[in-house]
Length: 68
Image (cartoon, rainbow, N blue to C red; front, top):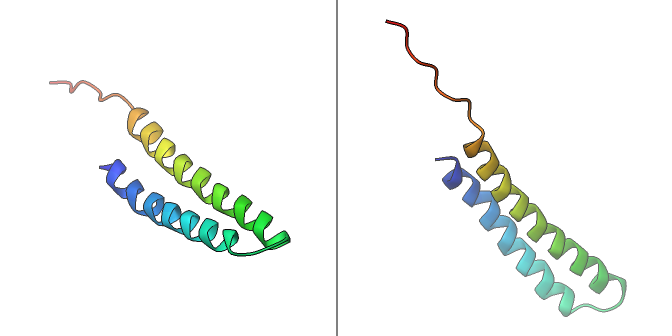
């Protein structure tokens, strides 16, 4: 279930990264360099969100046996 919750911000960050890279290619000078770094930063953050969701789902505590 945590994977589905992580897909929303990761998708938004990926779309924003593509949008920033598209705009940076149309710019010149310092804005082009800053846009490239910002776009790749958005992709990196999206990947970290997905990796965090995988880690959170895989590191839940084991269920304890019930005493009867």
